[in-house]
Image (cartoon, rainbow, N blue to C red; front, side):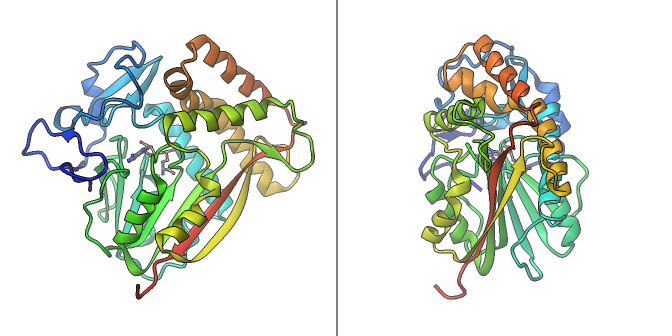
Length: 349
Ligand SMILES: C[S@@+](CC[C@H](N)C(=O)[O-])C[C@H]1O[C@@H](n2cnc3c(N)ncnc32)[C@H](O)[C@@H]1O
């Protein structure tokens, strides 16, 4: 998908020129065999830093950092670990999206799609479910991490690739492009959406599912001094320093319009921080969210706090412990707001 010789970020060098510029992989387990890294923290300078990757040798490797495992292809590009716990957290979120969308995998009104792209597919759980739901479609999931399962439906395939680079898919190709939780992953969303537009078929759809990282409340129960404010401000600030925003959930509608998509529909949702709501559906989602956050906040923030923010591991752990403490309180009626935004590429330009 990416082209290595030109574009905004071209310094990806292949060790073995026989290797394709993107790699379609079938086996996700192999990366565990290649742990040649030490758990010494991120010590190669900057998380933003070295643009030079060695694709052929490193694609299945990983980096250990403060007890967590991270992807090695485009080392440092992504804030989250890719170990078993991180994968479980992604699958929790998938379950929460199904609860949120009443078991729907998308809201865009697709009609007989043939070509579907899932950008930053993670464990591939959405792509696999989509392939099952649309057996006559080909679903392609791309990610920096080779963490997708080996056994997948025959119409589902995965590629290790950086979606923030130039895409090498054919133009006007996809009936549907899906983006979910790429917050903090994309340096230039307008460039990204322009590419998505170019590679969507006329009449095809795009859908972006994102949520805020800054809790809020409607009833004043999250006072101005609440720790959740500190939490939200810190994540947003880390994203800004990292050069990849966490506020895309409130920007995606405007940005896709700017890229040329039309008939933009925005659906809002709320993820309660725990089971405080009385409404049954909201309570259920909140209980899942509490579990996801209790086990997930370390993976979400440890690298950002230590490598981007320059915090000590000890300071970061105190911050994370405080968050886990707050997550237990049902007195604070806080939630994470989110949006599902979908839109269509016009038939004629
Ligand atoms: C929070 S996860 C979301 C995964 C999936 N979309 C889902 O909703 O289950 C973000 C994923 O994006 C991947 N990612 C981050 N930056 C990327 C990039 N530049 N190109 C491709 N994948 C990327 C990460 O490796 C991770 O798997």
